[in-house]
Length: 82
Image 1: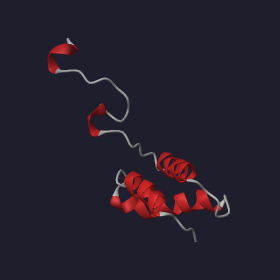
Image 2: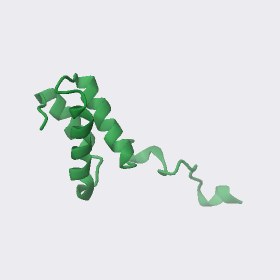
Image 3: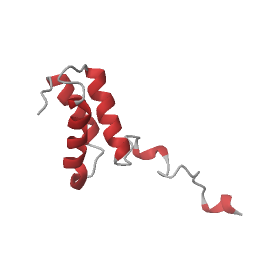
Image 4: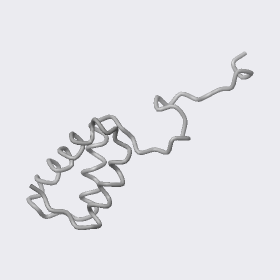
């Protein structure tokens, strides 16, 4: 079991918003696993890093929706393909 401060819980909650509901349990378990390695001594930055690692392991990014396709391809309009 881990214990988080209010600030640390806010960090994890903010990143969890990008996780599909069906993957949130796995996400939270992975965050906890990363933090348990620190033996209960972790800063806000450690919590943020653990949450980002958990996102990465689930292949989920926390980028805004309007950044383009997730695969990184450039988007082109119908007139630009000719």
